[in-house]
Amino acid sequence: MQIKQHVPNIITLLNLFCGCIALIFVTHQDFLSAFFFVSLGIFFDFFDGFFARLFRVSSPLGLQLDSLADMITSGVVPGLTMFMLLSKDGSSTTDIMPYFGFIITLGACYRLANFNIDTRQSDSFIGLPTPANALLIMSLPLIMQGELHATVTDLLSNQWFLLLITVLSAFIMNAEIALFSLKVKKMSIKDNLLQVIFLSLSLILILFFKFLGVAMVILLYILLSILRKLF
Image (cartoon, rainbow, N blue to C red; front, side):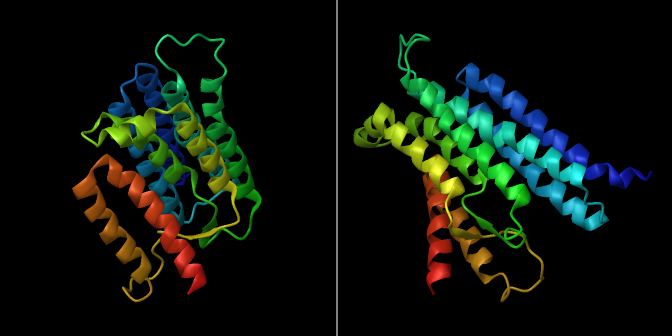
């Protein structure tokens, strides 16, 4: 068996490895390092499919490995992050509120399982992809650590607001909303104009707003997809 057949699966396992490391950092409340490893895992997640198509070695095993790796990196890690955010100082294991953070994990699990059997999502997505949702959730504690207006910080520190984000997160991942894919299949600006516009605006938002820009990019992605569907 040729080595190239194993390359996509190895890259997928690197995604899983990054997710495991991110879990450790979240438990130590080192959210910046956790964000970095989740981002690195998502990078590997993008390229495992790229190399599978490039080498023409796509397989059912690769599909299952991809979902299992995403379940950790883009499901368990953001769920645990929300658990930590919902846990106030002095919280005990009997406090119920923090556990609702794992609604994100449940939503991600359902979406990943549904994605594997949904034949409509080969060229676009139905519902927010779990990696995009993970970046949104992972950016929240870093936004709180930034120099923002006190009103924003207080809002992101409010348990009920965080619970609202949690529920909306699980919902948007599984909502019947068509979202465009960033996969480039034709080397033409005309055929990828929306992707070019999105990536350009994303770069500007992140450069100017840093981690707040990450959350804004995810919201922009949803907005552009809805506008694309309408017009």
